[in-house]
Length: 52
Length: 326
Image (cartoon, rainbow over all chains, first blue to last red):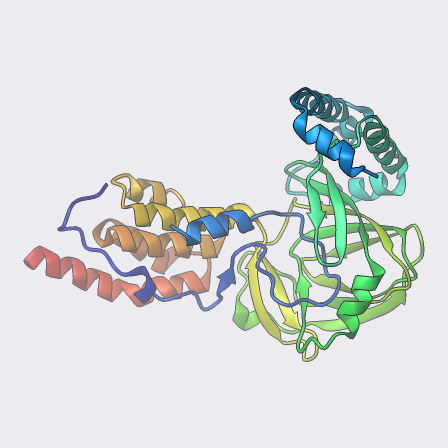
């Protein structure tokens, strides 16, 4: 673990987001019927990281 | 049908469970080395991994001759006849409207076979839903409607999604065509600039789908179905999202090696991964991040990343100077 108290760090939440915000893979919002069937699986990891 | 008493007996019988595992493994191995899978692999292996059109062309030829689907169903049915508790060794796709199996996947293409259920499509269409969105998947899709179910599809066009995609220049989505699909028809939808919607269906759709990963766009884009206006976007490649999540994890763990681990991703092809990693790096060590931040503000190929980096430089330089003086 990094114990150096002299290291300067920013709070990540205070840093700007991109003007084009990009959501995580697989997080499509409400969608019309069709448009493509998702063949990927990423939700499990999203849940894991949210709990850290 | 699995009889309840038989299931109870199976659950208590370790030997049968072990045999089931062994027979499932044998089936999976047989399929992997079988004619169908070998044909898929031999078709896609020689192709350039960036040539989306070549991969889509090969997928169209494979879907045109769908004898392999009979072989797949026959093989699974034979195995289930031998052992009703067998689980076919294919990842299951199970959504609100569509159920299927992912039958082949490599670094260029994923091929699935499944059924879109008419009743659920009708329920979705008739329910009060509020605003909905049209989704451009960011990937070329080859769809074979083996049984089209009397479906009518609408097709939508939007500006092509490029590697320097910006929300400000996303433009609008508009319907370009609406038509009935015939049984056996093969439709290519370039999800980098097109989308389709099932407007109407009479019965279940049996759909064979090849999703071309080669040449895919970095993001999938959503437009409002009524106004056609841009709604938002998300990562196409789940590995991009995994890198973002792991970068956050590395920063939260505060490990000594976090800086070189994170810095290694600052040249990632996806602009949103580069900026996400930069934010995490600034959350670990501003002094170490500063040279990378300056470079990003001047040289990053994406205008949003350059703009975000430039907005933080003054604050970062000030914080480092202040710490030196203290």
